[in-house]
Length: 259
Image (cartoon, rainbow, N blue to C red; front, side):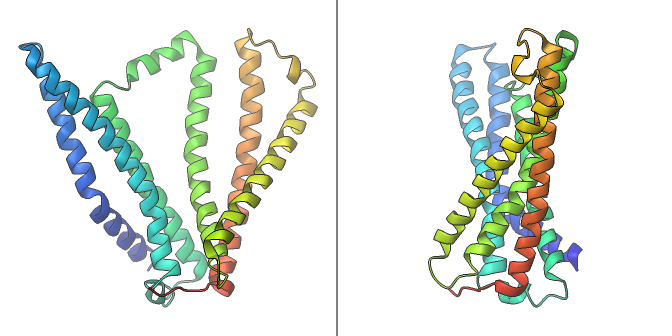
């Protein structure tokens, strides 16, 4: 049943986003074609510029729409009318929540892959230059890889956090969105406290952290990577905590809304 719920979510997302992505793909193809024709006549260069800009805008709209579709889907299928069907499925609340997180993450990951592929195609992102960075500055290259991996993991965590915030807000009968906002404030404060603890841990491990020479790439990479890795561990921990909070609220405190 988890597979079916996962599939239904992805089918819904595809139905919501297909025309945005297909339209963006079509304009991107035009941009590439006009770019090749611009070598023949400068008039095509103007068409290329217009198609190029529209392509960039389409990519950004696709990413934004994918992001909000994830939470709109959760809102309608867990907290509103469609939830009466979702909560009758022969699945535990934890499995329903996990399926929602995985389907949402899959959607946005696919959206990122499509966006990056199109940006590479129209030469906004130069893969070769990025690969050459490994030869020029291995520390900067490694930091870039670590940062990209952290961003992917952090987005996964952020889905769980937003689901928990929505579940918390809609566990109340009134002023639900105010309580959603309050939850985000509490999460932000928790993150700041953990950031301070993270800095303290790194300072204990490396007493010379504040005196690191910014002209020494190796020392800078060591200092920054240590902070980033521990912060990532803390964030994953917060994600796990938020998952259990959301599961508890879905099981015991959910307050479904009609209309």
